[in-house]
Length: 317
Image (cartoon, rainbow, N blue to C red; front, side, top):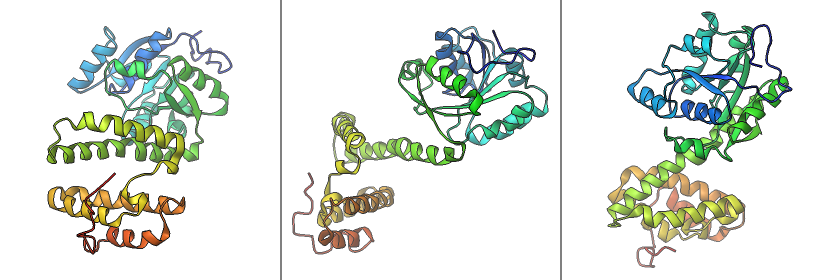
């Protein structure tokens, strides 16, 4: 039975077949709604402003009307609030203040930063608040629906809604991972550090390889990065390799000199990551203390080549 003001949703049961609405047709919302449709739920309304949003909704949710956010809430039992993090609090306040929220209505946001408390204005209006954050990058295409299979979701909700939240994630093919309200910002920072910064690092690496004359940097990096990621996930810091972990100060100095000559915008990032790598390698016994001093001197911004100009510093492995 669908949740209504008279018959509120019972979290002890598996979610009933629900009408689903999406507020914010970015890359995430339509994909989640399409996944819920595969589980037997029924998308009924989407809100989107930009041309890209309208096209995305039409591709993933064909024949579903584009309406205002208030109309989405009027039509749907389960509403996905899939807007940028900074826009979420204002959206929730506005929907609650205008009376758009109905008692017994499931409101789900997908922000990694926020837990369930950001939905408190809607909770006071009788809504049932859930924070379900898919730990995945989205393309805005149908491939996202397939990628949800096995995807972890950061779940935060009132204890009485825990079973309902976890059931919805499982219906989308995901794996629920409970995140405490107070831990949401740290959880989100960890994901951003790993995923968002990874994209930046890979893009920089491909640019530098092209500058060095490599015609297909993606082909060269694919096996290398795939193995590095697999090793890191399996072994953590024990998987550290390369000149920083070995303490090859001369090689690192040569890297810095080349970057300053050919890609000065990459120097700060290289130095920051190298310092962090050196700290972790030293703490885990991979970097020998007697080699760390020269290395850290290079990373502190000394003469890029120092005394290593003739020692074969350009070699890497």
